[in-house]
Image (cartoon, rainbow, N blue to C red; front, side):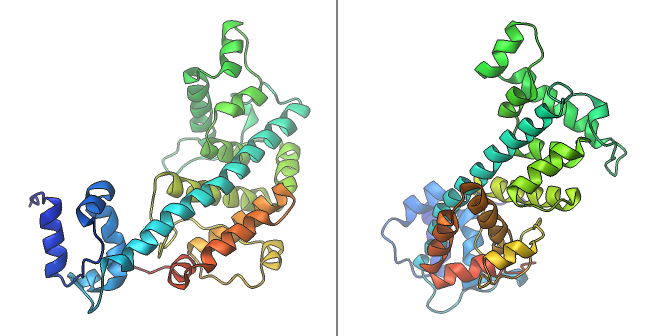
Length: 292
């Protein structure tokens, strides 16, 4: 059965009927600009039993209760994106550098450069990766690629990586057969020499970045993909306690990697200071709600 669309004023009346106190002056504007459906994910901790269909609000619940974590999420996503961007650019540069020094500057689109691991459907991961790389290069209008295209020359890996997204770089790291270049890259970042574990950690950082890029909720989120936390990472933040599958599980890894790249602890201090400003928000980042 299709639902009938409601105006923002009808939405407000519905929220009032469910027991929510409207304590902000521009509720119509908030709903119009942020989407009721997006906001509704922040309602749930303040509702009686939403998992079983009881969407009435608990006594005393008000708009500012869920609007605070909603706005903090917006600010926190930007801070996380700053860190994942630093990691992505560094991985991009170091992987290209190490591959090129080992004589692999022009074989990034050749099947023999990658392991022949298959997806469950039988398709080889390397084939999908190579197709992806060729697609990004062929569509690129970046000067670094146009130069080689006009010269009818194949662009080298140090130019190609500049047009590849984070997830494609992650797959190159996972599949490339130049184990020496891969090892030098991951060890320089502070990851372990075990290529599978290092690749999984980078993949989890890609997932975290994608959540933030698409403005997804972080507060109370149960993460689908979480990284392994290495011993050195735990040692760097011994008092940073979090539950498995929480955003905090990924944050400890991100803080460690960015601090190592930057050579100081300025980034992790900013993350920790941000979380310290609101206890309820911090709890929701470190302890996910396991919703049905």
